[in-house]
Image (cartoon, rainbow, N blue to C red):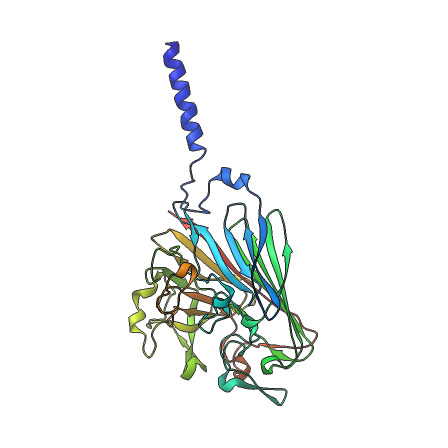
Length: 385
């Protein structure tokens, strides 16, 4: 009888011990066991990534207490990697990127993970008029030939117990790429223990200037196991989109998404209606978000069935550009020498509307002296069983 009692006690202790190491089977979780959460502290590390024009470029790694990682290089203020767990706890990258600085500098970098400005997206005819003066730009797209994605940013590490962050600053001189005003820009990338990547933008100027900032990260929530994102389920909290014409420049017209292939008001696979899009090879359009208040609100959510990874997007911005990497192809290789593929990733670029300086009916994008531009976007990652 005593022997039997000892065996049962040993069995119960063994079961309890094993269960204490099991990953919680919640419908939605971070993907980590609670004991792992308590055993790690958020960290920031730094490694030399290369140099350009006599300036050193570093790759910084933010790691939260769960082990989620966000990597940033100060060339282009670029998110070079985001590593999260899948439903089985397996860690993998959920964004596209390159191994070397030379690849990020190359002509085929597709703005991979970069900060885009001074005005993201497009300005028709590469010019605008402000206070009666016409300004001609170096290019109509993505802030110009030498836009923010081509600049080396200063970075300050911001350690913390629950949040680790990188504070990036850049001084854009009056006349840079044709834009007026000396502009001071600060972008803070913060990684929280809730598996949130927060991007906070602030800026000031000494002359009136248009300003539209965004980040151009390419997401593939399969962790590289799926060549394309057509099975990824997406919803966008927008009932309208901007009509676009040549060079994908908005006409100024705003249309309803209902009864079009652009309707993601109900979550469904990205590839469900992609073949029905006329005069385009995939999605590349601006959605007019339901939230136009300037306060933080949910904008979109994505879910990859195979990996179980989910991502929610929150923003203070009035619009989001949804792009399905229509121009990526196998001639461009990414991290680990792996070729890219058409529809291999998707972008959700939160921002004000393209060509706003030339469209008075669009929300204002002119920053004036004495004002402070502020914007926030959050990408929150989780796992669903």
